[in-house]
Image 1 (spheres, one colour):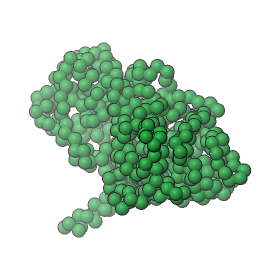
Image 2: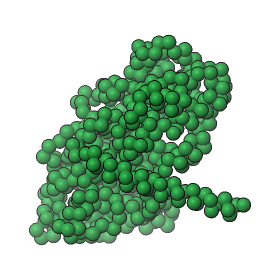
Image 3: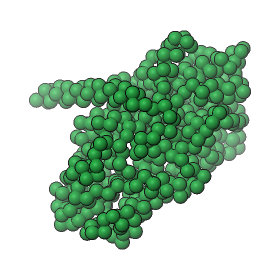
Amino acid sequence: MCGIIGVVATTPVNQLLYDGLQVLQHRGQDAAGIATAHSGRFHMHKGPGLVRDVFRTRNMINLTGNWGIGHCRYPTAGSADNAAESQPFYVNSPFGLMLAHNGNLTNATQLKQDMFLQDLRHMNTNSDSEVLLNVLAHELQAASTKYQVDAEIIFRAVAGVHRRVRGAYAVVVMIAGYGLLAFRDPYGIRPLIIGRHQTEAGMEYMVASESVALDTLGFKVLRDVAPGEAILIDTRGNFVSRQCAERTTHAPCIFEFVYLARPDSLIDGISVYATRLKMGEYLAEKIKHTMPHLEIDTVIPIPDSSRPAAMELAKRLNLPYREGFVKNRYIGRTFIMPGQKQRSKSVRQKLNAIGMEFKGKNVLLVDDSIVRGTTSREIVMMAREAGARHVYFASAAPPVRFPNVYGIDMPTRSELIACDRSDEEIRYEIGADALIYQDLDDLKAAVHALNHSISSFETSCFDGQYITGDITGEYLSRVESTRGAAVKRYDDESEGAQLDLNLITE
């Protein structure tokens, strides 16, 4: 999961891109980058860290031009060189291209071999986004006979990308001398939306991962980029689009609605906030029918993304809704921290219990999902330490039993608490007195209810059905093996750094 943004404006875009990335910061906290174009030259600055830490006034001054792209990177376990894998990526042949990508390519290894052996292209990092950039560059070269570019050539190149690439990808690309290209994979797994803003000097366009970036910067939503579609906006603001995939299936990632996206966003015409209210509604009905014996005194959300579901659940069960945890907003999201040990250490720095809401009460804690169980276990323990008599736990999502291979950092089965465990075994592991999971059919119904035109969803982390059809047991084992070594290296490095710090302070 990453955040991407692209703008073609009538005035300098550096501040627009910076502000947009700030709004999309929840989608990636590991690194950030901005690229702009002015007088035929690209200007770029990127690096590891939050948006506010990467960019200084001197960097912004150098990002001149009226069009550009930005990216905030989601961390993957064991990323040893964040600076090298920061985006956008650049290639100068056959045309100058800057690319930012959200998602994950499932055939990146094969593509990398093809690039080296057949297309004679070299990769500088392990990032699949650089692979995607080089595939696009090669297809542009193949589609162009005189090393000139126009809309027809670009659309043919995107069609070639769709034929070769597998996985999830929402992409923004700067094409030197031409303008902004944006496209989405044929399944529409990762989100991408376009908006526009009328000025006295002409029409301005913005493409972003979520509508909240458009809203906050004064752009009106035009529509979502369709699965397989490519959109071109030249430097004069001319807009053209084409369907470039031979076959498409609209199957957005349902985990965007559960956890990843901001509640004030619209994805594929669906309000994220409204879907979370619906999740609470369905979850309340399940509790009524399957656990009517629970004597619940109060409903408490695990901040922040579970609040809408918890509020609606409390309303449907006619129970008091209370805020029982205070969140330190200066601690990164534990779900996207690399390294299991670091996640465990950060939970209590991130949340603190309000004792009066727990003491002597039977509390129902509501979270958006349970992935690794680390946070859930710590939070149940915190509730007990605060004096709760009984602690019940409800998840607005079904059990996460399978790896996600489309850009969410939970790819190994050994890290998933629900893998090969029953609900009762999970309840015991997290220390709760009762555990209630959302049913997958109800989760799908909650999202489908807000847009009846979408009936398919990417739900592989819940049911093991991978929408792209190319994921095998061998593939998952290879990913898990690579990740396991990376996680161990990250944890060892973290422990070594802490030991050095202890020696210094002693």
